[in-house]
Image (tube, rainbow, N blue to C red; front, side, top):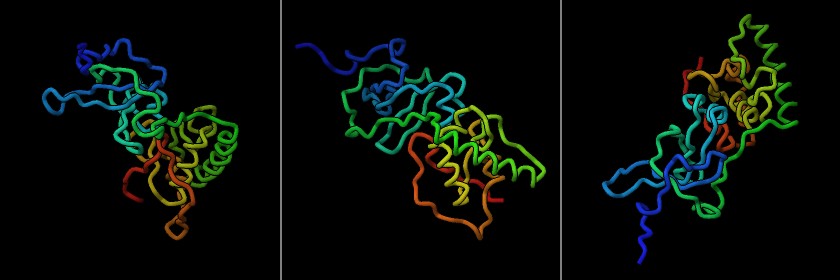
Length: 205
C-alpha cells in the first residue's frame, strides 16, 4: 500500500506558489514527530506592511491562519514544506484573505480625510505623517484603500490607536485627527479582518 503520510507528500518550499494561492504549510514540530500544519498564503512585502507587519515589508512573508478570524505572519523562509490546500479550505470558505487594494471610493475618501488632516497639521504647527500615511493625500495604497481608511476613521472616532504602517508607533495622522474624549463616538462598522483589523494598545496623550 502506498504511503500517503505527510512526510511522503510534502513538497519543497522552493516550489511553493507566491501568487496568493492557499496552501497547507508545515511550520515546525511543536511535538516530536507531529508537524505543526497550518493553512496559509504568501503576502508580498507591500501587502505585509499594509496589514500591520512592517518587519516583512522587504521580503514578504507567509500569512498563516489560526482560525477563521485569527492569523499571524511568519518570514518568507520559515515554513519547512507545503502541499496544495483542499478546495474551500478547512474553515468553510471563510479563509479568503481580503485583498487590500485602492478603489475609486477609497481614493475619494482618502482625499477627504487627507484634507482634514492637512488642516489639523497646519493648526498644530507640525506634520509627522509618513509619506505613505493613510491620512496623507497621494497614490499610495493606504490613502486609496477603503478598507484601511474605514478602519482608520473608526479608530479616530473611537479614540482607539491606529498603528503606523512604517514605524512601530501610533499613526501621526491619527494623532492629528483624533477627537477629544468628550467627542468619542462608537461607529456602526467593524474593522475588516486582513487589513488593519485590530487597534493596538498605546498610551493616550
